[in-house]
Amino acid sequence: MDIQTGQVVRAVGPMENLEKQLSCPICLDMFTKPVVILPCQHNLCRSCANDLYDSRNPYHFSGGIFRCPTCRFEVVLDRHGVYGLQRNLLVENIIDIYKQQLENSGGGGGDGLEPPLKTKNSKEPMCQEHEDERINIYCITCQVPTCSMCKVFGQHKDCKVSPLKSIYETQKTELQNSIDLLAASNSCVQAMLAQMEVACKTVEENSQQQKQKLSEKFDLLYAVLEERKAHLLEQITQEQDEKVAVVQSLVEQYKEQLQVSRTLLDQATQSLENNSVAEFLISAKQLIANAKDTAKNSHLQRPEPGFEKMDHLTLFTDEVEAMLAKMDFGAQDDEEDDDDDDEDFEEAEEEE
Image 1 (cartoon, rainbow, N blue to C red):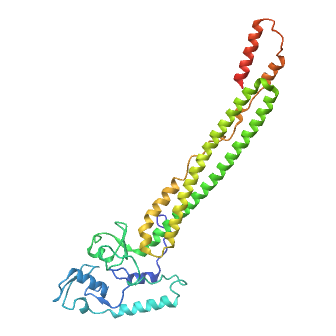
Image 2 (image 1 turned 45 degrees about the vertical axis):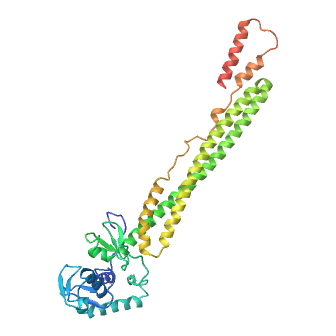
Image 3 (image 1 turned 120 degrees about the horizontal axis):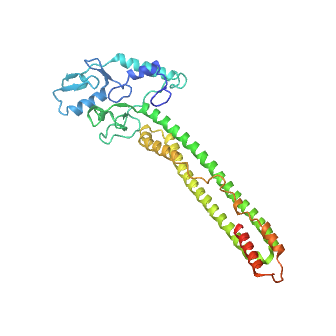
């Protein structure tokens, strides 16, 4: 496991080491015939070497200087250029044996062998700086896909590069992890939406129960308390509307969050299904960042515990009923007793 990234690193097999040794330092792909050998004993695809030689020596009718891209050893070439270099038949034979071994093993699917690298004729995005060069390497320093010519003598010549395939596998794994995180976040949002729906239903049910209780109590007081009854019913309805509005507002927020997450999930899934490595890497970094940000911002506000309860609106009428039972249509003995009764009635209304 890589300690810095926390990812499991697969052990490199002998065939993969062999493929690495058979890779051109210019295009980073497996050597294509014919393979030329320099006096410094380093090998190059003749087509890659010729492209590099032509770019450095546009007027080489009488020869020119060629610098090895691996060790920087300078070689003086005659008028034949790189076509005057000796072919490395041993390396070409090894490549033939290696490719034959891959074909016999079913393209690398059964024995853990990787399929051979794509040839230069594959349909891949081309470099903007060098229109004849396809994007075949990844600049680790600038974190952008580029071509081998940009690495040899272009803007990435001092940068650290890596084959597209290794960066592709790393970022593909990272994007997959982000998708899994996003999917888990969406599950939490779905569960929260279900809770919001239950909360709305509970608020409505509790509100209906309180209305029923309130109606039963006011039926005992008849017409004397009808006005008060209507007022308190309106108070419960208002609180119900306020709470339901709060919950519905949260529901809309969660639905919007879920829609954003689903859209991003679809984009990420489409990117994973894209067979073009370079096109994938062009959009993968932004998709990974968006997926992580969306997953982190998925925890929205939720109602406090007990938000659905309406018990605080319960009406107690025992004292009022006792006071009303003592009321008489006859005149009071004195004004003091009448004032006391009025104070008792006002206190009972305040308690309600």
